[in-house]
Image (cartoon, rainbow, N blue to C red; front, top):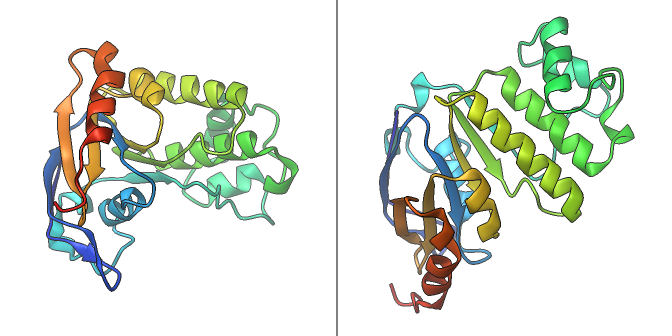
Length: 223
């Protein structure tokens, strides 16, 4: 589905090193690593938002529909939720169904600033789904949410992934618990410059915490 041949990315000093891997349909990848290591940079490169990374570094993206859930909801504040969804191609009926799917039935006439952070994230997720994505990118979707709201959004995303088994996902997170619920594959980014120190399917999800503990203990500053 998608092949990454990223040779590197720097902002005056190296940030990303070589990232060579593939993403297949149905892959549910959680991307973890230390804060500031370059996880969002890698996600932006995959999405095509970083124009310093050549198109040839992400093979197959031009054939895919990509939905990107940013940390900020990025909904147009002067348009209603339904209007925001219509802007990406949803009909009025489809917008209503998508909002209902994310638990926002009856909120189509609301403006984004009238919502809580958790509700705005769910509305932004509905907008992502409106493009009928082949690949769903999530950048710390549970950040700044209280445990109840985070748990509800996590369960919602897991259910959406189960209902769309062909859709691939990459979710940036810091929480091994998210891996247990959402992922069938783990990426761990670390090093200077950052590379994928781990890229494997999760055959035994119950071992995630132990694996992450070992990866976090590695000294990769000189890699």
